[in-house]
Each structure stands twice: as C-alpha cells, then as structure tokens.
Image (cartoon, rainbow, N blue to C red; front, side, top):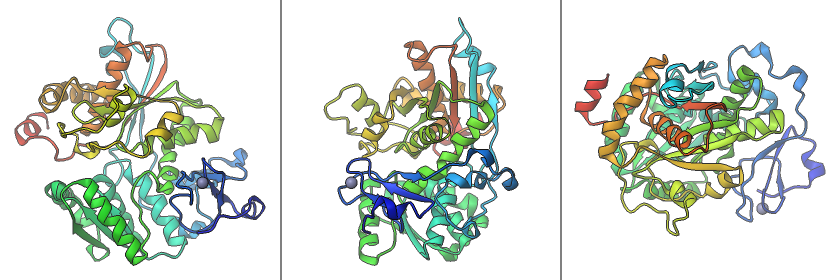
Length: 402
Ligand SMILES: [Zn+2]
C-alpha cells in the first residue's frame, strides 16, 4: 500500500499516519508503515455536538464519528451493549484500609457476547475488513481474541483462519465448546500450529504472506485499538472527565493504548496508565524495572490469556503514552493459587460475579501501586475487569470458588 499526500487524505473521513516518519495512508488495510512505524488512525474533524450519536442506543456504533468505517451499512451488530461501570465500595475499603479510596470504579466486560472485551476489537476489525471487500482473515490466538473474531466472522459471513499453538490446544477446545452453538463453524478454520504462541504467530504471518489473506493479529492491527477505544468513550461519558488512572492487566497493551487514545481524542488529556502483568510472566514489568533482558525463561503463571514470555513490540509505544508497569501477585503459580480466592471474593462483594484471572492480576497490581504510593487513595481510578473466568485454574480450586 502506497502512502499518499495529506491533501489527498483530507478527502477521506480518516487516515493513518506513521508516528515515526509522518507518512500518510488513507485507504486499504495496512499494518505497518514502510519504515516499520506504527500507524494510528487520525480523523480530520470530530463534531462533538452530535457525539455520541444517541440514535445508536447502547451500541458502540454510537461513537461512529471517530471509528474507521465510511459506510455504516457495513457496521456489524454483534449484540454488544454498553457495559456496567460500578463505583466500588468494598474493594476501595479493603485494599486501602487506613484511607479508603474515594473514587474507585470498575468497568465490567464479562457481559459481552464472548465474555471478554475482545468483542470490541472484533466488531471493528471485521466491519472494516468487510467494507474493504475482504472475505477472509487470518489470526493467531491462545483463546479470547480468537473466540471473539470467530463469532464476529461467522456473523459477518467471513472465513477466519485461526492459528493456535499446541500448548494452548486443550484450553482453546474447552473455550470453543462453550460457544459452539453461537458460531457457524463453516466460517472458522482452526489450524494447530507449532508449540508456542510465537511459533503459531510466525506460521500465521507466513500463511498471510503466501495467500494474500490479511493478518488480523496483534497490536499492529490498529483496527483493534479503534474498537477497544469505545471502552474509553463509555467511561468518559459516565465519569464526565478523564480519570487520574486506568489500571489493566496487559498482554500486548491494546486496551491501555485504546483508552489513552479515547481520552486524547475526547478531551486532549492523557490519563495515568498502569499495566499489570503476573509476576510469573511479566516481561513488560521487568523491562520497566530495568532488566537488560526482560524475556521470561519460563512461564510460571495460571494467567494464560496474557502469559507471553516475550517483550511485545508495543512496549515502547506504551512507554511513550506514559504507562507505568507493576507486578500482579507476589510470585508465580503457587502464590497465585493462594491469592486468587481472596481477590475474587473482593470483586464478588462489589457485585461483579464473573471475573477472570486477568482481572485478579489487575486488582493485585493496583494494591501494589497503592502500597508503593504511585497511586494515591484520593485519586480517581478505573479498574478494568476485562472478562469472565476461563478454564485456567486447577480443577480443585475452580470447584471451590465457583
Ligand atoms: Zn514511517
């Protein structure tokens, strides 16, 4: 895809501009600039008088003025609604007993159709790909994002090739079984490929290159960022201002980056961003704390949805957005098993019934940031509860807490 002149790009609703060299791209699906740089979407004007468009009700399409779709006939309806935004009473007291948090809010995403915030990535990616005329997509996944995109593609009538590493096969099969009735398998081709996630990604990239099928996967699919940005718009609508902190467990950081982008587009102000990774697999935290080689030699965590030992390419972009990184839990798998029941109970007390391990990680990290004084109890904090419980725990513990 060739870059174009800004004057030419001004004829369009949106364009993508390289953050490194400034090159502009205004049509087609493009992941990276020719120089390798990130290509965030930009909008020529945002008319805030009719923003959000209330005629779309609770659908994320109410923010269509700042989503990269030209023709709303291609706007895919996945049945997504605005998700709950709760003011915490119990967690706010218990994690800061001497000085309870005054404004801690929880955004609850487990009510989405595939029970995580990944549906927000899928509705945008698949809608735009349909508008661009594609009938096939390829992705790599260990679970949540693959499920969300499989459902979206089956609703849209697009074929999705899903590369899954051997070490996530059992997890994927159990997760897929839960949603089988909601997905037309005619549109989903699962390929078990390699052992590790890195190998599955490499094989998906190779298939995409050979076949000409667009690669959906990862942080460099900027459509994911645009879709998940709708979380930020919903929070800003409910809160009426940019929070001091947004706290989330991090895989590649699409959620953090999307939240930051929403705040910048709506108010021109950046929130504090806190990215949390489980101590048993935390390459971003290790890089943040100054390790020269942050790669984890072994994955010692039950939080498999974000348990990638390699430092993602997104790390410098998250640092540039001002993210601080912190460990969740006090150690690897053994510590997690001791800490998880208490963390789940805290969420339950605050009225959040379905909570995944990523959200336990985020809450544990928030506790650490309060203790170390990075976050103050009187600051406004949004804690992302990104999805429901998956089959990631040993059965004995899973039975005792459900
Ligand atoms: Zn560039």
